[in-house]
Length: 119
Image (tube, rainbow, N blue to C red; front, side):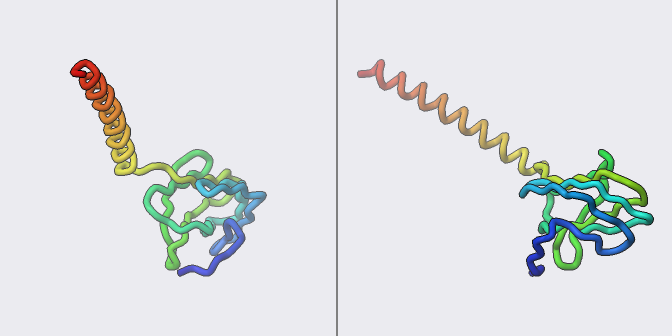
């Protein structure tokens, strides 16, 4: 289990500076300036669904040895964004849940109307 770190992100390799990061439970964004390729560690446990972008382009992000989300940033000045997006199974599960809710409501309306007519 990683030790809690109140810092939202840090540079674990390379020479980069993280400028005024913004963070919520589901996203993190900041400008990052570096003279070489750098690796950032975000203080968020990685699991499927987390996505990362550098200047709007998707980049590979994954867990480090402690399970925290890491990604590489190329040299230069970049806008780095990390956010949670629903994976395929979550989207499917959401669709099934919505369909089940609609069917339940429709069945309740149909059965409720049928019982009233029978009385």
